[in-house]
Length: 403
Length: 165
Ligand SMILES: Cc1ncc(COP(=O)(O)O)c(C=O)c1O
Image (cartoon, rainbow over all chains, first blue to last red; front, side, top):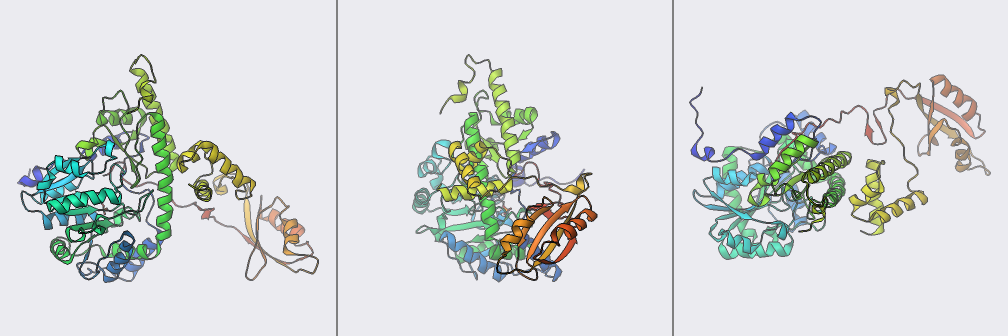
C-alpha cells in the first residue's frame, strides 16, 4: 500500500522492452548472451589504478560542477581528433555518464509540447527523456535500404521540419551503422534550413572500423546548434564508473549546467580521475579493444550472412543487426524468444529500439570469440531446423533468398 | 587489407586464442580462407609463429611438476660466444626457456622437473659443469599468478547483466 501514483509524464512512458528479455534470459540455463550493451573488457588497469589512487589520497569531495578542469582540458584535446574545438572553461560539462548528458540536454532545450525528432531504430533512452522533459518524440524511421542512416527525405516525410530538436546517434546502437561526412552534411543542411537543434550522442565515436568518426558539430554552421554527447563507458570499458560529457557553445553549456548543477552537483569524483588517466595513457588499450571488436564484427557479420540472415556491414559500435530469417514472418520478438528457448542464445529483438527495428535482431559482439563461435553455431542449427520444420517444398531455397 | 595488416591481425587473433580454424580466422579478418591459410603458413615458415601450446596450471593437476627460474653467468673466450653456450643449454628437455638478458647475469632459464631434487641435480650435473658457466642461482617457483598473459588467480566471471540496453 502506498499513496504514490506516478506523475502523468512518468505514467506515459512504457517500461523498457529490454527488461522483458532480461528476465527471460535470466530464467534460462546455459545461456550465451549476445544481448549485452557494454564491453566485455574491464577498464584499462591504469585507469582503475588512478581511481584507487584518488581514493587512497582521500579525493572524495565534490569537484567543480562542470568537472575537474584538468579532465576538461584532456577532453578538449581528445575531441580535436574529431575536428572539434571546445574551450574547457565554458564549453564542456562532465556528467554522470552520457545518460545524464542526454537527459540534461532534453531538460535544457525542450519545452513542453516541442516535437523531438528521433531516428529509429536507436538507443532506447531518447524517447523517454524527451517525454520526461515534456517533449513529444517524433519517430523518423531509417531502414536497411539506407544502411540505417538518416536522410533528409526521411526527416521531411516524418514531419521533422516542425521539430525543435533532432537526436542523432552515430555510430548507432542497435544497428552498428555509422554516418559518413556526406551523409551528415545532408542532415546538417536540413537542420540549418528548418532551424533544428541537434543533440548528437557520439558515445561510440572511438569504435569505428572503416572510416574515422565524423562529428556533425564539425560541419559548417553546426557548432552553434549542436550539443555533442560522449562518454567513457564504451571506448574505455568504464560503464560502471558512470562518466560522460557534453560539449557545446557557452550558452548551451550554461543552460545544461544549470540542470546538472541542481540535479547532480558534479559527476563522480573517483570516476573523473579514472577518466583523466584513461585519456592520458590508455590509447593503446583502446586500440587493442577496438581491434578485437573489429575481428569479432567481421566474424559475426559474415556468419550471419552465411546462415541466411541478411546482415548489412555494420561499421561502428559493437552491434550487428541481422534480419530475422525466413519462416518467422519478420517477427523479431517471436524469433528471439524461440531462439532463447530452443538454443539458449539471447539476442534483443530490433523492435525494442523503435519502429524501424522490426524484423531485425540486435546482436552484441561484446563477447569472447569462443562464445561467439558457439552462439553462431547454435543459431545456425536453430535456423536450419526451423526452416526444415516449415515443410517448404524446397528446403534451403529460402536460405539463399536475396533481398 | 594489405599483407602486413593481415599478419598483424592474424598474430593478434592467435595470441588471444591459438586454437582457431583458418576459416574462422578468415572471417575475422574479412579475407578469403585461402589467403588466411597461406598467411598462416608463411608466418610459420618464416619462423614468426614458433609453436602452439596449451597454457597449463600444473598446480591444478596431480602431476609432480616443479619449475625454477635459473640465473646463469658465463665466461667467454675468443672461441666461444653466447650462442655457443646457448646452443648446448637449449638441448636439454628440462630447459623450457632460455634468454640472454641484460643486467647482473647473462642468461635467464626456466627449468622444470618432477621435484626440487631433480632440478638441483640437473643444474649441478648438467649446467654447472659446462666449462663456460661460472655461476648459477636457482629460484624455485612457489606460485604462478600469470603465465603467457593468462591470469591464474583472477576469476574470469562475467558480472554483466545478461541483457542490457
Ligand atoms: C547510444 C548510447 N548512448 C548512451 C549510453 C549510456 O552511456 P553511459 O554509460 O555513458 O551513460 C549507451 C549505453 O548503452 C548507448 O548505447
